[in-house]
Length: 228
Image 1 (cartoon, helix red, strand yellow):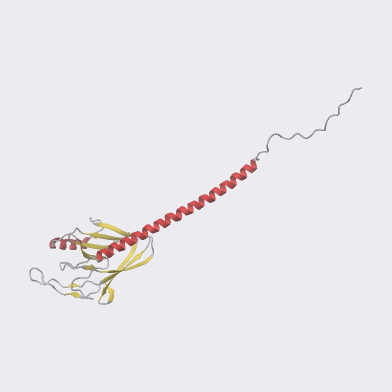
Image 2 (tube, one colour; image 1 turned 90 degrees about the vertical axis):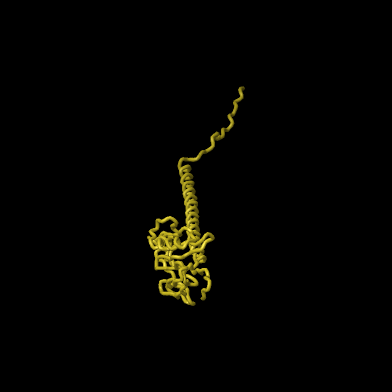
């Protein structure tokens, strides 16, 4: 007899292909990556902005400090030549004669159109030139050679003088210096005695990077025969 072969039970065929991502899963992944990238960029942008602001504030602070240091250095070299006033403040202009290694020069600090300017004349050792530079300091317009913009955003400037143990407005009459004869034997005009110190008050506003009033006390160079 012929023998019948019994077929073996069959098993479900396993798929040879791996299951891939669906389109929705890809889109969700891209959305998550986009959110993470935007968050990271916003954080980096915030750090960069904060750094720029900090650098700007530091530069403005250093600028302000250098201006005050220069003004203090000028006052520390004030000299009363007897030929012109050693120092004078008229409410807007602080004029002074400053000694240098080569001679004497006239320096003026003043506020014009919201800017604190500094003008310095050429250095001289001649009487006539010193008088000429002092007189020309009354006609400054802010564009003369030797003019520098020290600070912007200055709304107001006031200067007080310390004389005889008291602080007062520099525009008020101070102690009168003793008259001295010139080369012709004639007495010089009476002049106000130099103060011992100054108090500068700068009101800063838009453009300066600061707000409020900056007060700085500065000592003048002692003069021969000057008493406190």
